[in-house]
Image 1: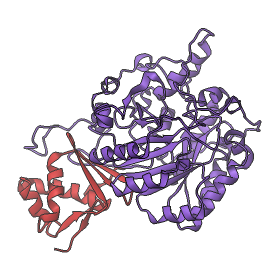
Image 2 (image 1 turned 135 degrees about the vertical axis):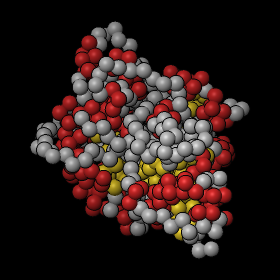
Image 3 (image 1 turned 60 degrees about the horizontal axis):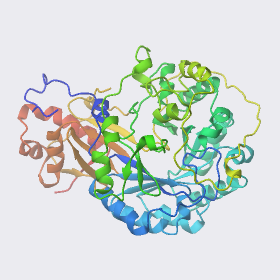
Image 4 (image 1 turned 90 degrees about the vertical axis):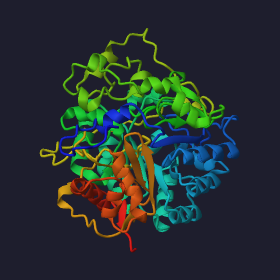
Length: 426
Length: 98
């Protein structure tokens, strides 16, 4: 890459972008920042096992210092979540501070504080994106996972945002066994409010580990989702999180790369830095922003991140014809289902993950998340609904692969373009 | 990932251009990352000299002058012109009235 271009037409092609990213960047492109473990809800699949505030959470001054660092590192934006970030008393102050310091903010909320006034405020700020979490197109399906009344709360937030003239806000859906049959209904809901639909993958992280077996889409539903995405193309955002579906045939656009510690990471409410939002476990803990060299020191020098930035090998997947498209899938999904990290994703569409899951015996140690901020014991109770699942007719002539953008994945909503001497990259 | 057919776009090298005011540029060893806060698009410049050209646009009377000032040869102008055209198409680079 450093060789000067002396003969344009014969210069050696630079390595594909994905190879450069594999070695990591000087700063993340964007990162997920969970501001608090406090939450008014107790969703059964919460990635961060949120509920109660942690007394060690970063203070307003400490949070601003992190924003200063992000500005200096030119991190373009942060995906703020929680917990429910808007219940922090200084949420709006931090949001304004970040955008005033050239750090864009996308935040996920269940809508509890999105009043008409808040919606108007958000609509005025070009550097803010909002996504409202909704895991059912109907109250029964949504509330079974997210809790009683949460559907009504989310819809009121959507109404307020639409009424305030907010554009391009998102409805963010974690795809489950119970809402896959509602994909068309979600799309209609998004259209009604002038919102954009985002579909993301259920991870067995946090409390999600407790309900994953019952909630993760069936093999048939994964195919149904893929077909639906093919049919609905560019109007629906999905995650790089779904790149394991590429192994159905067409490679999905997007980085098709686990960005953990390379281009993304997570800062949790107490300042701990993890490789990705789905991996809150000591195994993936890189450091803490309160240490002397701050966040940038952790990003630059963490031993874990350095290791993640070395090329990964396919392991058991290396001989699979689809390894180049799915790269073995999601590290966190493997880890929290007790599968080896160099093997197939538990939801491998070729069925290899399922085979391994079936072969796990009772002796398999499934790692537990490092922290649990759930409120009481009831919040970890499994709550699911029984629904009759329907299979859509398969789309017979997929015109194009689904657009793969991220939602809860930190690269959410990015439109990626490459410009330069070699635009034909991986 | 979006791919743009740059061959179909014409770039006027003889007028003044600039980065869009909502675009942030982050140099990287391989080139640079450009992020547009308005369109929420991210672009990768895979060439440090293209970065130099882009950074020179604001103070150069024309894109051609920016290219030559960045040390490009005449023979390289068509290729860099096409790269700039891709940036114009995604609103990363916009026309400027000198």
